[in-house]
Amino acid sequence: MMTSIAPDVRMAGVQRTYPPRAAVVSWIFFDWAAQPYFTLITTFVFAPYFATSIAPDPATGQSLWGFAMAAAGLAIALMSPVLGAIADASGRRKPWIAGFGALLVLAACTLWIGKPGDPSIIAPLLLAVALASVGAEFATVFNNAMMPTLVPPERIGRLSGTGWATGYIGGIVSLIIVLGFLAANPETGRTLLGFKPLFGLDPVSHQGDRIVGPLTGLWFIIFVMPLFLFTPDYPAKRPVREALREGLSELKRSIRSLPQQKSLAAFLLANMIYTDGLVSLFAFGGIYAAGTFGWHTIQIGSFGIMLAIAGTFGAWLGGKLDDSLGPRRVITGSLLLLLLAVAAILLVDKDSVLFVAVAPPQPGAPLFSSAAERAYLVLGCLIGAAGGPLQAASRTLLIRLAPKDRIAQYFGLFALTGKVTSFIGPLLIGMITAVTASQKAGMAVLVVFFVAGLGLLMRVRD
Image (cartoon, rainbow, N blue to C red; front, side, top):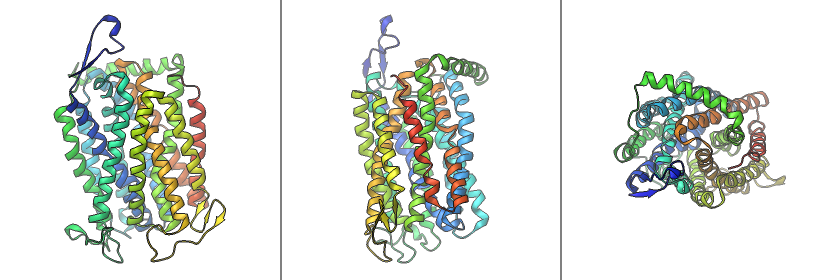
């Protein structure tokens, strides 16, 4: 058993006991279990497939996807603090993870219906993606709230970074499975590794792209089980109805007290802005590459593997830096890297890199053979390396700033600030893309989010 003196009880001379290593490792595997939704569906496989093969054209697909993500973000923003407050009052986290995990599984499996060129299934697909997003995000809220009960405060940064790194590795493995064995090039009928797709999946009808929905659901069920088996939960404190009343009352008090907690309030506001930019960047990065370079599943998925590898090392290193330098400095450095990478990506086109003309990609050429594609790969890996530490250090900083007895409630507020404006980023990208018919113009708005978030972060003291 790992033991440490918890800072909130040390003065009273009480020693706090933490669960065994198996419980901590099982908690970490939640990130592994949930990551394929973000890797396979919202970023590298299904989202670009939707934009290029189901929607009328990539720009329309990007705008429709943005509207769906905006609707999901608004629902998450409105409900997260309330649910977090109820969880704090009741003391239970696992039932909420199970319920919203089930929503994620059912909605993700529905994506199998997404046949190419069928406009009648666009609305049901977007609804399923939005519901899956709600399930994934809410399950994550309650999973995050378990962190302070697992390790001593001085190890929270490493735990958070390890969780994110493990999630990235899960994303890499899931992408390799899809690209190497399931999704094939419609022209050659072969996967990235040269195999025919398993289970007789038809490349022409993009069954290899559509299978990522059921795969995500099955993956989550298998790998979230250790959390339920080995990670302890709080016992129930009171009935749900009583918890609802108490939780809402506590939430009101917490919101009213924010003006007196200047660093916490500034951090939640900064998180609201830069998380919106980061989520939008990941959500539209694959779609942007599909429209700019004409990439399909194999190219985008290969790019995703490289980005996830960079993210794995970034999250792992960020966790170590978090414990030694503090989460605020890690967040600041990550935001500066993201600003640099996004600004540079806007200056990359298929026939130019940073205003220098280059030869465009040639049909039938080897994978990523053009200079513009390689530049996009490098910048994408920089985004991946910065995105992991940014997200991991953000939840660490919240734990350092928030009252320990209301941690789920503040993770609900954390999710609120991460989602209350999350519809604005996709909505702006969708609207600007629709008005200008330019994906580049739509993506340019992300620079504003990172600059504003960085400015507010300067007011936070951890």
